[in-house]
Amino acid sequence: MIIALFLPCFENRTSVIANTLKAHLALLGANLIYGFNYIIAKGIMPHKINASAFVFIRLFCGTILFWIVKSAIKEKVAKKDMLRLVLCGLLGAAANQLLFFNGLSLTSPIDASIIMTSTPILVLAFSALILDERLTYFKLLGTMLAGVGAIVLIVHGNRSAGTSSLLGNMLVFLNATAYALYLITVKPLMKKYNPLTLISWVFLYGFIFMLPFGLPEIITTSFKDFTINTILAIGFVVVFTTFFAYLFNIYALKYVSPSVNSSYIYLQPVVNFVIVSVYAALITNSVYSQDIDIVKIMSCILVITGVYLVGKTGRQKSLL
Image 1 (spheres, rainbow, N blue to C red):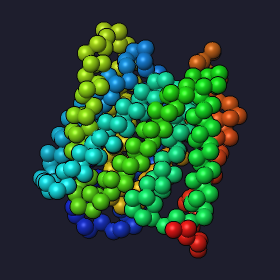
Image 2 (spheres, rainbow, N blue to C red):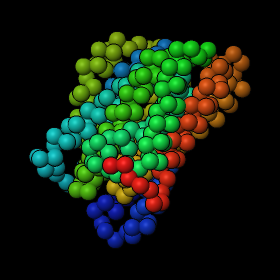
Image 3 (spheres, one colour):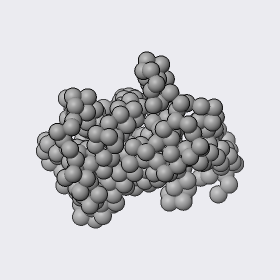
């Protein structure tokens, strides 16, 4: 079934409209998974497993799963493209996951999901710098608004009464930066190779880069203390957040731009707000009961308004 999803990548019989629709559905599925991931992963870190050890399991299992599926696709990567794939592995797997999970283990799921919505703004900024993409007044204003929202939220992490933290918020923001650079770096390769080929190499290189950080932590992990809930949470992250979500994202990049791909990230705080609110309402004295406040809501509004302006179409005067 998974392989069938990728047949359009090397069989050109599927129409452009159908491929684009599949890409949007894939992005919808991936970001719904990410929305649930915040509270599921946070629920077992760090008291059951250290963040870097968790990333070790993610990349180890993900690499094996992707290469098993890739075995059905006989495709070689040109030597000249390997260096770019190494960079993709560093940004899109190792740095991305290490920064995100270590940040999430320190801060609120709400904060992390809102800060991650800065990714499209970062994609825009890097696109203007690296790809020489046209910058308009709306895009500049939107970038400024979203930037203010993200900065306020990051700084607020030190003053919030909930589970927020300044260090955790900064790590999540650095993760968003790494992921934005990854989207831009991997895009040219999407025109040349099957998504499964790319993601397999990205995870392999990412696993290698992660080893100095994850290996010492996985060795000292107390697996005997794992409960059924711990195993189920790890299983969700490995199967859904890692395997399916990455497949869906890399598949979508074949047919839509990095900016469209990253724009779906705005589903994540919405899903997360709902999950945290329900959790806090059902669980007495929940640690998340104070994670939603007016500053976080206003920060979220600023970031989303900024992204709306960035994505605004029509005849706009270019600044550059």
